[in-house]
Structures are given as C-alpha cells and as structure tokens.
Length: 164
Image (cartoon, rainbow, N blue to C red; front, side):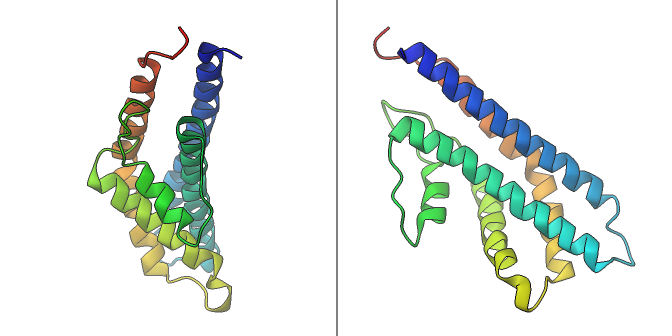
C-alpha cells in the first residue's frame, strides 16, 4: 500500500471515530435536557456511562493517531495520561499537535479521571453533583475540542507524503 492509500485509510478511521464522538455528544446533550430536579439515579448512571464512553472514544481516536504517526505505544501504568499528553505534542517532521489549547487538555483530563472513578464506582455509586458538573463542562468545551481535532485533520491532509 502506498503512502497516499495509507493516509486515506488513516483519515477514514479518524473520521469514523470522530463521528462516534459526535454521536456521544448528541446523546449527552439530550440527557442534559433531562437533568433537572428531581433527578433519578438511573439518569445519573446513564450520564456517567456516556461520559465514560465519550472519553474512551477520544482515547481510541488518540490511539489511532499515535499508532499511525509514531508507530508505537508503550503500555505502562501511566499509559492513559501519557497518551493524552502526547496529543499536545507537535512532533516536527512527523505530525502537528492534535490538541492545541490548555482547556482541551484539561477537559479531556477531567473526563479521563472521571472514567477511572466510573469504572470503580460500583462499591459506592456516583456523586450526582459531580456528574452534572462534569457534564456541563464537557458540553461547554465540545466545540473547542472538536475544532482542534478538525484543525489537526486539515493539517494532516495538507502534509506532503514521503514517497510521492
């Protein structure tokens, strides 16, 4: 497979993952309209589930980027934060940064931390206020993050490919 075909495959995987992320945002926006008192534990758990899935979808996107452009991912106890940090890096001669603002990194890091709590919350449940707080922050930062992801994609499309 040539460089152009490989890039087309990468962009197809990238676009499919971004579409999944957008669908999850739509679900969360719909759930946010139901987030008024009284709140059911089912709604809180559902929002927590979709916040968890949203970050997982972002991490899948970041994995697609890292594997394609850097050809390596080290598995370690700090893998999840290191993958997120890597997305802020502009790697000269390889790729631009996927995330360019501090706000994007902070919101995604909050989602990452929440996902960890969510996965281990079976013994004590979720804090309703924390879930709704994070939901508001996630939805408020949606456009910033998606715009940065889109800008990254546009830069990638314009990169000269070796072997051409």
